Image (cartoon, rainbow, N blue to C red; front, top):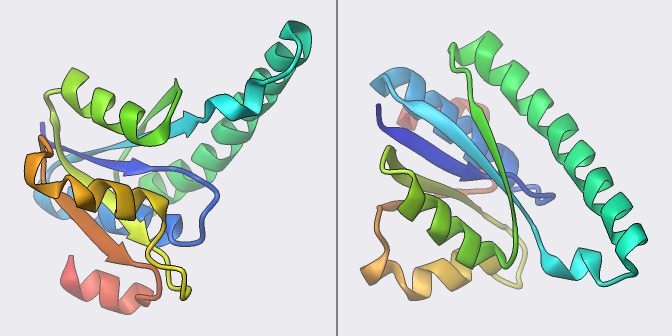
Length: 151
């Protein structure tokens, strides 16, 4: 089964990327894999403190995932899979794509502020010609109705 991989982070544009991935998967018979990457700078503390922070980060990710997963199950009939990795986001995204041959499309949300589309979109688009899968960039300000009409 072809999977749409979408990155779960704290950005506003993540919401539209989640919606797009779920809608495309539902309409094409695919699945959704949600990847969350915990950056290494979150754990530059003493060992005991970093273990507690790592567990808190995982709990926060699971709570966010459950909100998206419930919507995907209830509204789109998709039961997403959660993958949590630790490291540099772009490195971990590419590693996950290489390790899971069912991932067919990477879905990213683009920010709407004047600083640009966001760090993941900026970094990954620089290497777009050599990426192992196509990338779909979903504008952060698309309405639900517009997303529905284009998926």
